[in-house]
Image (cartoon, rainbow, N blue to C red; front, side, top):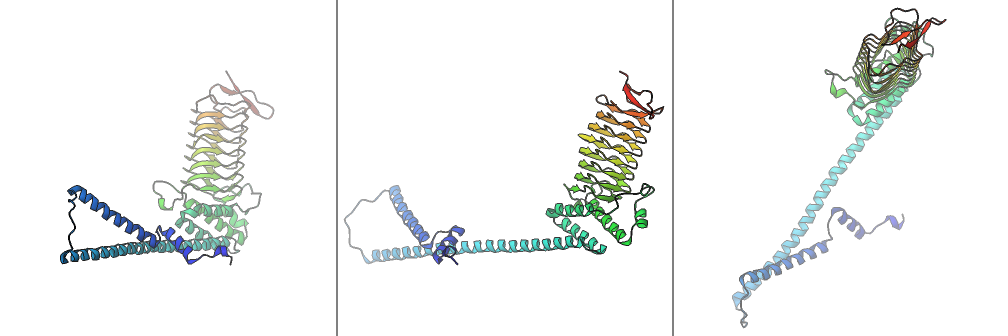
Length: 421
């Protein structure tokens, strides 16, 4: 060991005094004695000044009584000095004891914290390892262990949610989903019939993962607020989600870019701050009825292969449905678009129902309405934009915004919309 890492006892003592905020003993005693002598001298002179100094007289021999009094005064002075030394020593001892207790409590707290963090790290590592196990029961155990960790330790919730989302983002289903697999009830029936035993077990694990997420995001008047995880960000981009539901949930941000929703998908009365559904596909009915999509909702290029229900939904600063494809009914009855709503080049293969919807700005340029379209009682803060939009013709049941109508049909049976102004 080098000399730089060694230190003498004197150096250690100096560092200890500095840490405790104490002076060296000789320095403390010297300072106390000097202060005491100064106080006595000042007190003597102040006393003489207040009562007046007695006139000087010729000195007289000291009698026995006076000598005894002087001796008592000397002993009292010595006793006072001893008491002062004892006081200084006692203070230092008390100070050292107090600091020692504080350090002991801090050390105990640090030890307990380190032990807790060590247990959490071990539990987290074991749980993540279980998610990769070949047996579904072990994977389920890992999921529920992570859930318990996140519930007990709020600081780890973001990490746990990210792990569960990463698990759901792993591929599971074939890329091609049969067209009739999602019709009539949930997707479970098709999976039970079409998947082998191992895949059926994996389905149960994935459904449990989805249930865990929803269970801690439910937020309504009667829900258990102690189980709610606020400020959660769900990154489920590219995930395969089966009978997925965030009904009555409150989420800060979701990323479903490129995700596939199989079976029934529910966002009924959900509250989502930022919702990214770019390029997502809904293989089944989906409902956003009375949902609140606060800041931005982006469905650019999304495909809705089942009914898309946005009845009474509130969409915030921006709602993008550009290039979206609605294969079944698109229901936006009484929906409120508080910002700009973009349906440019969107395709409505069945009914497009915007009855009593309200728009701040509505852009339907290049949209295609192959089924019935109705904007009955719809309200627009500014005139709707329908340049280049086309609709099926003849169709006498279309209800367009004021001053818009269809012209004669082209060879493909679609008629352009024109403004009568």
